[in-house]
Length: 354
Image (cartoon, rainbow, N blue to C red; front, side, top):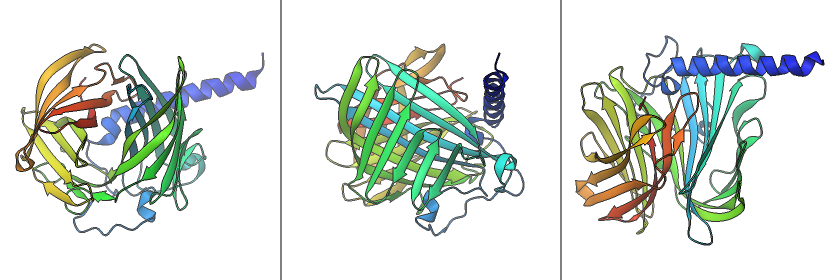
């Protein structure tokens, strides 16, 4: 028996278990637990610095580069695509090699009306297996990559046991800042994150599925967010909506569920030319209309979403109710249809449905 492959395999399993256990113990990427002393916290009035802020912020505990896309093939079939890289820090410092306190978690998924394909990668920082550089921009974990020029064109690849994709993303609109110029409040207690997006991305590329290659086109939404404790200890999860309407307007809205049955909400209205209106707690409303049994959990898969100030009253429906992310920290993520006062497509993410 050759000991080296065996030991490498054992080491990989132990590393995966350790990272998964650590991240899971922090909640969903550490969002609901108290930030340890020494970690930075977001402050109102922060002046963003690009391209530096496209890169990592190791003095904050949690961070992500998060892309979702609504796609169609030549026959008009709907597909959803996700590429996400999470960074979670054990300590507010950089370090080098195996002493680096950064943990990395990558999620990739493709959703069809009938199937949901998902895979996960886990890595320890400091050894080159995963990371992000700001200029030139490159985010990677193993052989998955999101790289290019944020102001122009990005390329994106990922693969799993039964799927893969290779996409080109073209910017067709401006960068968007949520909340108060990128300072996004998440609770009545004042917890917050830094949050900006690129919601105007045109996508072309190829999905590789068990049935073969599928050329697709569509629209994508890229989120950047970082903090050290953006949720309060009485919040149990969130429901996040990115809605792209047929008339070119867009809306981001979320509700953060509380243990008392109430929710904290926020929204951003985005015009076709990129002008924004930020809405405080209570303006955005989302009511569950229908639930589904998903992987043994009761998960909302049809919602009534309203924003009275813009006369938005729509029904949001999952294209595939079974879009469960059976990853180290499980959640629901998938494409949606929008019908009512406005029509269109979008994406829905729901966490905390244990």
